Structures are given as C-alpha cells and as structure tokens.
Amino acid sequence: MIDKINDLKSRTGLPFLATDRNVLNLPGVGKSLTYRVIGITRYGRRILEFDHDGTRVHSPIINQMGKVVIIESKSINEYIDQLKNMGEDVSEYSDLYGYSIGETEERMPIYEYPEYEFEVTENITNLELDEVA
Image (cartoon, rainbow, N blue to C red):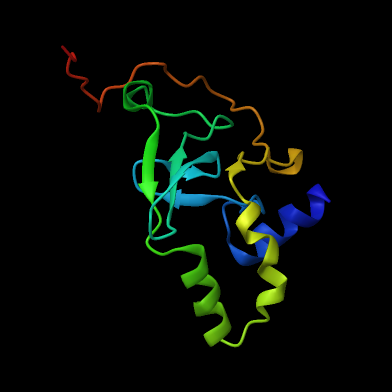
C-alpha cells in the first residue's frame, strides 16, 4: 500500500494525501470534531462547545484560549427541511437528532509522517503572548 500511495503522489505531484477522518474546520477551533451539546436555544438551534483536536500539536496560544462555543445557524428541523427541499430522503437523517457529543477520530497509521532527518526547534519566534491579568 505504501508503494502505491508513493506512486500516486509521484504521478499526481501531490506532497501528501488527505486523511479520511471526519473533521470540521472552524475559525478559532481548527480542524476538530471534539464537541458536546451544552444547550438548545428556544428556536431549536444547538449550542455546541468545541475543544481543540487532541490528536494534533497546537500552538501554545491554545492553552490560553480554552474551549469555543458556537450556536448553530439553524435548527435541526430547518436543516432537515432544507435537505427535503433539495430532494434528499430525510428518513436517512432520522438519527441526526442523536448527535450530541463527538470526538475527533484518530488518524490512520498509513497517514503518519516518517521521522524527520533533522531536529525541529521548540522555540516559537513568530508568536507573542501577552500576560493575562
């Protein structure tokens, strides 16, 4: 499999192949699917608390940021109605209401990068952190 992936990357000029993990790319959160529902608005929109992907290395600023809370832009019912109007079979989405917690999937071993032939510095030179009072 490794030879086939290397051949594919070589023939297409791709530096890497994307993983098939389910993730969301959110501003202030990054690529993560680590969340839990912490509430529902009176209009039926979920209030989600996202945490940063624990399977990835992040900038030290993440330790000061904490979790990110977002309110969905529409209720699940509005989303189902939108899918119906697009011609989707909404019965296939009947378990959508059960999604109240999620964790970012582990990366498959085939996508783990090999060890570098050099050392990477621990110093971060493009980031200044102000002291929080």
